[in-house]
Image (cartoon, rainbow over all chains, first blue to last red; front, top):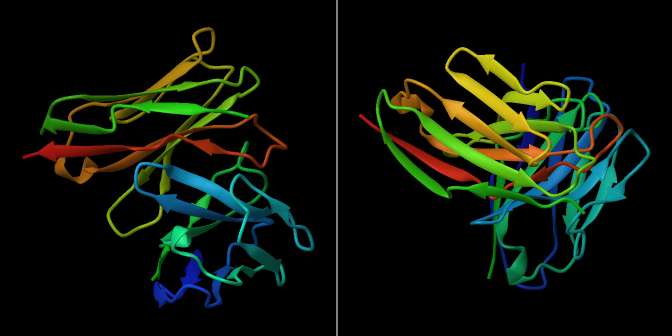
Length: 114
Length: 113
């Protein structure tokens, strides 16, 4: 049982380059999320998708776009990477909203922007 | 919006001792409070949660208490073991229907053998 799978695990970009982080879950969860984790800042929500076909902004959406490709997959795109986007990114999923359901997290993607 | 404060940021205990991590929240409408444990190189994993209709919940060596009047909740780990060493995050949400889960900044717990 794979759970939540994120790719790539590590990536180094130059300022201005673009990239997409991929996330897939095999638990038939309805909701998916992208968080970023910075030292001393905890986990902050970037975007979420409550259900297939919907996406909404979280706390720190600027500089990011997302696509809910289907029920299983939720991607995060950086169109023009900036050093401030250096972070560890976590994808998560849940049956419903995190206010009543457990979040299952992936192992994370460490992104460095030079 | 919700603001969750978590203390301490680091905590070292001797193996076998107890550890307590405390969180406060600002939104009186919050009613769901989970705790996540993050081991090195892994994603966070839920270890226990509590809803506002109960004051305490236990699961083996782990317990969580909630004081809604004071808007604070705490994680208690008894008989700590080296495998308890990790970063712990508290969080708060308005419950069912809410997609905003606000996390504290984390506590790095080190259990010294």
